[in-house]
Length: 364
Ligand SMILES: Cc1ncc(COP(=O)(O)O)c(C=O)c1O
Image (cartoon, rainbow, N blue to C red; front, side):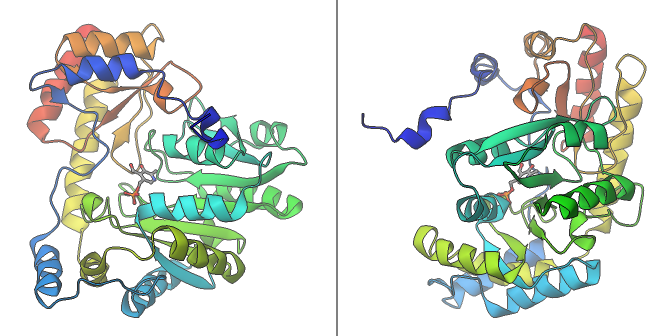
């Protein structure tokens, strides 16, 4: 057999049919996209270009350039996040892969609140681990009864993503404290994906579990907040023992990460993003107000997604109908064991959002 055993559980998405249909669309109203609709701010682009011109184009230290690691450490200290060591990674994706390699043995169970970002399930499977899903419908809250039902002797990790992709939910502090109490009782490690931590609409900041529990690996990045998805830059922070292993693994996998992007990112952490967040808050209000009459929908508190339940309760059928009406959105089944909802990204122009809302109401 040519292909490794490891890939036995890695299958192409079950909704490939829908993505095939979407590929045939010409100039769709596209509310499917998981990245910001703004470009990297000009001064940050200039900073990156400047460092390219200065010749900063070689390998960097495996764990990242010292000035960026220091900047990230200060950012996390200001937030009150517990950590002993920081490293720069190839996006949160790269960080999660290193953590999965460092921590998951075959048969280890990893608890993932459902709905969830697709990558978690597959990274766990890739290591031979077992993803265990905890239902958070209908209000996308973490509930003790649901969580404890799923814990076994094999449970090793819990993954928390807040603000959440695909729901836009921010878990309230009391939910996070409940998870911490359980994690402490059972000596579990928490992975906290904070990539949307500056997309917070109704509160000055978002509570994060790394503030409450030392045994947390916190992941963050520059893809969403500063539009740098293509520059592949993120970070991981947490207990020294784990970070040291991840740094060793980075040496043998990625070697190091994008040189000039690291220099630009030193500036990014000081670059004000409040106006952009206000713009996204307006888009959030627009889409929520536009859908709430006909859809059973939670108001997103962060990120840039809304996750309504569709009339009739068949998300995939609803997306096919949307595609027939030139609107591309993603079925909830991509992010969940349920197929009752759809994910709509509001990282789009207001004009596109108005067009999308019109179609969604017409076909519902
Ligand atoms: C929850 C979540 N985590 C991680 C990522 C990937 O981040 P990065 O670009 O830093 O690899 C995404 C991108 O969509 C995401 O939604």
